[in-house]
Image 1 (cartoon, helix red, strand yellow):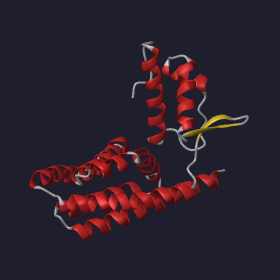
Image 2 (cartoon, one colour; image 1 turned 30 degrees about the vertical axis):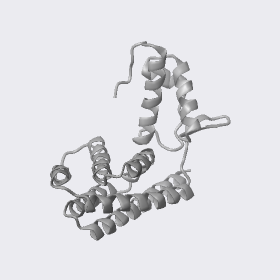
Image 3 (tube, rainbow, N blue to C red; image 1 turned 60 degrees about the vertical axis):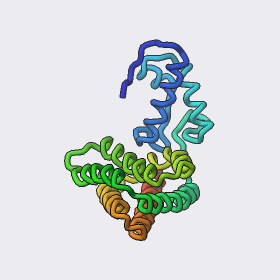
Image 4 (cartoon, helix red, strand yellow; image 1 turned 120 degrees about the vertical axis):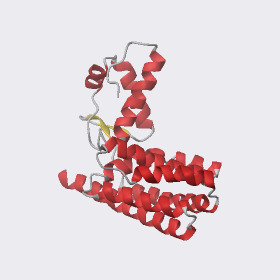
Length: 224
């Protein structure tokens, strides 16, 4: 990701500063509790502090960061209660997407699934960023295959949560590999129109993801 930007129009820099900081949080580069210092960020990106300040304000309004007295702006921690709530919602929606995708599977969509299955079977040497992108791509293929615009819209609204949960839970030893194996089996079941198996595997995947993220939160608490 580009760290230094030319002084283009202010609106563009504002938006790029916001997207950069948001991506860094969602990708786990900035973790819960990390301080975000305006001056340091401005120097890193070779821009003034104003777009950084505005980006942080925007992120705070969305719940990604918070201002702590005598400490400044820090990355917000999602509570365990909120994690459970989001995963409960996510489980229902993802299971529905899996079911609809299997029921509406066409030869054309099967060809797309086959390409993705091939990618998931060849993860050796892949970087964490590449695996994270594969994770999101897998979700997108299933959501699109469900052919339900409204469901796709709702799931898209949870994309930020999915990214931050996945990238953080991957810090649980073995979870990254386990998660990708789960994705592979889900893709195979849905591709073969195995509706009930796809639903079952999706439920298991979401539950395992929830447990891994909660384990990540507990490790953070232990370090405090």
